[in-house]
Length: 261
Ligand code: BGC
Image 1 (cartoon, rainbow, N blue to C red):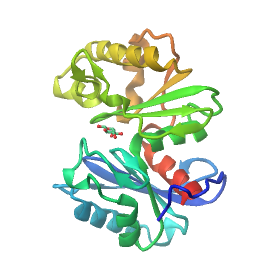
Image 2: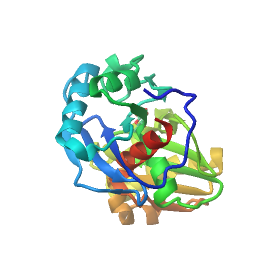
Image 3: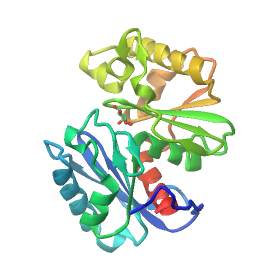
């Protein structure tokens, strides 16, 4: 299990393993830490419902076992869609409430029988984009926002992450922002790209007025379709799609575990 005091070291080679736990799917793959690329096709298993700690830990164990030796020997990185403070889940917006207060690091380390390091899903994507992707070598403040079931955010300054920023839950116009501007809201309400872009304009406009970032990076599955909505936004901050698309969580988790496990 990782500890909050574990010294971080910069890893620039080797094969790690990352797992991305989401509300609907659990994905994992080995990662080339030098290139920031998957070294094998990722595996996806539907998230058990209800997504209790015991059931999810079982699925994570099956996923790692199925890769055999290809899961390597480095600590395994796991993302979780909630606030993770020193390995412990503090919220559960889109997963079973039983997770709140669970030491996810300890649970998965015990079930997998090897060192596991857990972090917030958007934080993992943010680290991956900073090291290998769209925010590589960008100085100053970068905000990475993943648009999916919810909105996840990572705030990174000169390559250093401020964890658990949770800007997807900013209250805007009386609403929890992610309920209006996440990719799931577009689908749920059958919004046109243009209508959804108006909501993104309000969202990113609010964030840039609060944080004055140097760059926004937009991740999540919908980032593959960024040409349909990013050109509609008028922000003072440059805004670009994630380079790693939906693999950022897996890649960032593997990197973080290798450096902090
Ligand atoms: C959660 C965040 C998470 C985001 C994306 C939000 O509802 O509060 O912790 O990063 O969804 O999964």
